[in-house]
Structures are given as C-alpha cells and as structure tokens.
Length: 386
Ligand SMILES: *Cc1c(COP(=O)(O)O)cnc(C)c1O
Image (cartoon, rainbow, N blue to C red):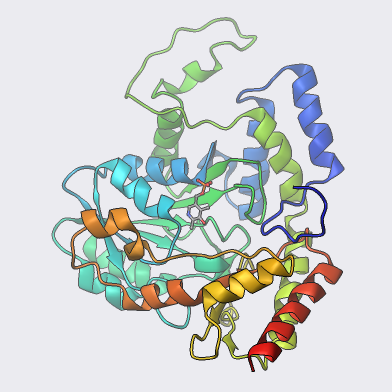
C-alpha cells in the first residue's frame, strides 16, 4: 500500500538492526538453520529465564502446537479441550494431530477459557488442554494445573499473544508442559513467520527437535558441518518445521527491543482506556493483580443497542483511514467446525464476544499522532450516532 496515511492494522516495527542482520545472513550464505537460530534460542531462553536446552525454534506457532501435541503422544481417539475464542490455528493443530478438539466456553470478564467449563468437558478420552492466554492476559493457571493434575492431562500453553506475560510471577509458557510462541508479522515480536516451543521436560524438547527436522536422529542434523559428513538415521516420520537463520536474524533484534516496545503498548493501552472511557463500548480487562500482561490487543466490545454495530463501526473507521482487527469470530461460528465438531460444543459467551469485538491499533509502530487519530475518529463516530 502507498503511504496514503492509512493506519494499517498490525504493521511490524522493523528497525535498521534487523535489516543489517538479515543482510549479514545473505552475505555469509548461511540461510537455513544455523548459528543465528542457535543464538536466538539462547536469547529467548534467557528472556524466559530457563535453560537454553529447553527451547526449540520452529517456523510457526501452528507448527509449535502441532509438535507439542505429537510429542505428548496425542492422536486419533483422543480428545483435547481448548477455548472457543482463539485463532483457528489452535484448533487446526489439534485436528492435525488426529485428536478431536473439544471446545470450552470462555469467561465473560477475562475472555480466557473458563476452568469450570474445562472440568465439565473432561471424559475418559481427554488427554490434554490447550489454553490460550487471550490478548496476553494469563489464564487461571492455578485452577487449570489443578484440573490437569487430577486427571493426568498434558497442558499446552498457546502463548501466541503472550511473549512478555507473567502469571503470579511465573513467565507464561513455562507453567504447563509446553509453551508455544508465535513470531508472525502482527505479533508483539516478529521473525516474519516463526515460532518457538518451550518444554518443561528434557525428553519432550529433544522429541520436539527431532520431530521438527524430518524425524532424523539428533546429532545428524549437523551432517554438513565442518566436522565432516555424518550419516543420519530417521527415527520417526517427522515434519519440516525448522526455523531459518534469516528468520532468527530478525528475531534476535526484535527480542532485544521487546521490553522497550512493551512499555510503548502499555502506555497506548492506558491512553485508550482514559480517552475513550465515556463511550458506550466495553474496554478490555486490565491484568489481574500480580500478573503482567503483554498488551498484545486492545479488544473493545461494541454494544449493538447503541445505534451502530461492530461491522458498521469497522466500516466507518476504514473510511476515516483506520484499519482495525477482529480477534476473533468464535471458533464455533466457523462453517467447518460447526459441521464437523460434535454439536455439544456450545459457546454462547465466545459467540457473543466474536460478534461484538473489534481490536484497535496497538503497536510500537503506531505513533502518538496516529493513536490520536484513532481516538478522535471513535469520538466523532459516536457523536454522530448519538
Ligand atoms: C497467531 C496465532 C497462532 C498462529 O501463529 P502462527 O505463528 O501464525 O502459526 C496461534 N494461536 C493464536 C492464539 C494466534 O494468535
């Protein structure tokens, strides 16, 4: 798009350091998984305060989720409980593992999966829970870990929104058996496409690394190194999910600025809250006491009894040069899941949220002037329908 002043939703914040690091990879001709992926993994582990052998860089969060499920031994005949308010990739990864997704409704305040609803969905076939820390607010992990311990279930944390988030002082992704992160373009930090798996257990992360690279035996993935050629063995029919050095080159510098960018979004969040507090919209929840939010999204709810519904508001903002997001239509409102998942998957709270929600621009790439334009546009629109 030309520079027309249109505020594109989710524009990444790319700086010169990333550009130079990518050029460096191109020049030294190490494009695939190599030293920069290794460095990025180490830096990420350090950021998460865990041992660097407990992370694996992959090419998306979708891949990360799929691998976590496969490494958990989940497959056909199993059930995996997840939330009705998430991106489709969470559910598709479960389907690709061969298991049946069971969709639980969300809590109306936090928009996160409701532990009571998880409890209700457990059967003899349930093997795992995939939780999503929606918008970067932590799920009720104490309750969820209690349920998982009582029923011997694996817990996989979809942390696509939650790189920076903490729950009662614990970094998200390190509480369950696996944490899966996304570095997609619109996320808090990006590698273009990319993801990361964090595991609690050494055997699990070793399995993830093996599965992410064709299922070939561990040491063999250095087969073209300067130690000389080595034969390799395939120990499982694995996947092609490894991260490239070109992606890691971007990620290394994005991670360096993550806390700085977090401060910018936190301030933008407070500013929306303050400047739009009298409008007839519902604002997103602030983090629970003792938690750290990532401030990934600013999802408002448009109350449809106020002369303008969500889709009309999106259109009016668009005409004023402002792009917004919708996170998300509920899982059960999509055609495929409606037709193919069991009919007991009723999620009225997520469905209603999905009809009313709209995400305002929230990004370190958004300038203060641009945020003012968003605020003024919303005030103007609501003034006119008044
Ligand atoms: C973006 C997203 C994903 C998928 O991430 P990719 O890296 O694009 O595969 C999964 N879950 C949630 C909640 C997301 O927002």
